[in-house]
Length: 119
Image (tube, rainbow, N blue to C red; front, side, top):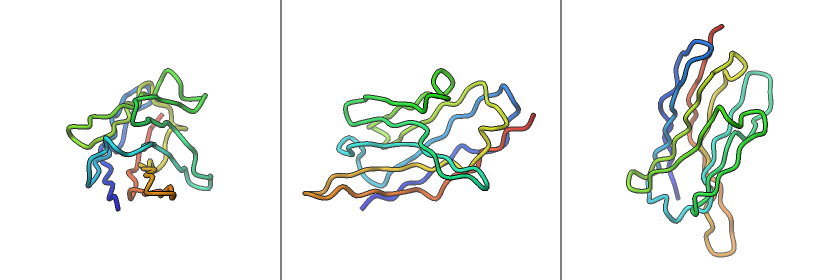
């Protein structure tokens, strides 16, 4: 099992930056995929970015160039660096870990961290 704790959310002005952190309760080096998702009020949860154990990254098309996902295996932490923030980036951001255990692929979620971008 994996516990995930997000931090770094808060209030930012449009055009500003924030860095979110997701710290796992176990080593992330062996976690197949870690990801950030977000959910705005009244909207479905959407995928923001993913990073694999091999450091391959993917991003939502609309966020490429503004958001960067990275990982520090020594700290068991995944980051989401967000630049040029827009009010539409306001959402609860969730960390997600996909862990293969035998034949099963298990999904774990953090509790989320609120990001609010003012115009």
